[in-house]
Length: 170
Image: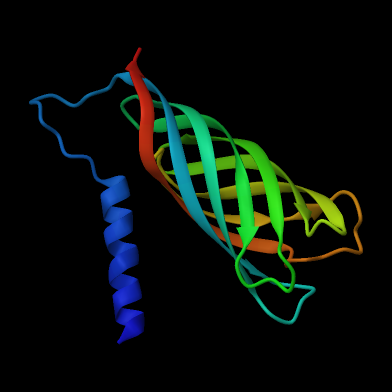
């Protein structure tokens, strides 16, 4: 019963984020610049830990999107917090993404710390989505303190724009 509710919620979330109601006769091919807040969920899996971890993230992002085929580019800064980690885990994160059509790629830089140890990671990403909703797979490349692994080396990320702060048409 719970799994069916989760699937329904995920499908509704994707449809809300991907579909755009059109209130004009012609397709809007214009470009927009936007400052917005997004939230996300990260499922951490793979090696080296025997259990999987869950993280939540909140970001402020400046993005540009539009055009006939719907592409976007954004720069973002935010914070990731571990939900079920062994110790309190927090990570400031900055990054950028760009897309063409439904596919996007990007890179993040994050510093995971429990305030006793820390590790800097480069996080390339590839996925599917739009300027409002993204699903991506993110391998983590450890740069510093390679022995400290508070989460696993792979993430599956779901993120969506929560609300818009400022929007301008170009």
